[in-house]
Amino acid sequence: MARPMKWRKVCCLPENNKFGPLDLPEDTKNYVNMTVDEYETIRLIDLEGFTQEECAKQMNVARTTVQGIYIEARKKLAESLVNGKVLLIEGGEYRLCDGFGNRCGRGCRREFH
Image (cartoon, rainbow, N blue to C red; front, side, top):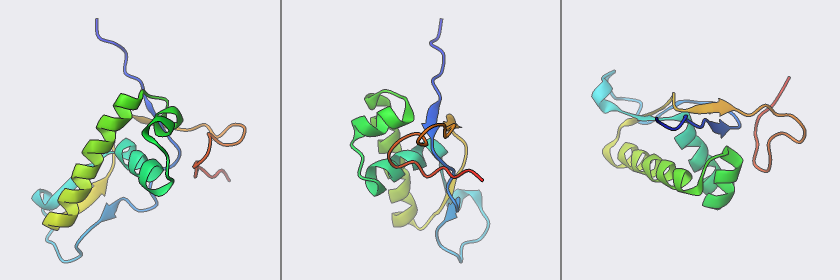
């Protein structure tokens, strides 16, 4: 029997989910798709300065899971930058944090209105 999937905790969705060259024709072969959980690992590790272990704790997954997600996310960033493709961030196996207490931890950007 397969192990149940563990959702990755994400603090917030990106404000913008499409990046890249502005002059490309609308063609799916010019797109690189990054999941929201891949975006979150880039945000936490590269922008917020988390270690992979801290990132794993924040996202409620194993460090080895974060490592795999992070490697894939960086490949996609590189493909977008080097090959001039549009980066589209959407989908993935994630749930937004609930924001109870002091939000979900250091680096949380979830805002409630």
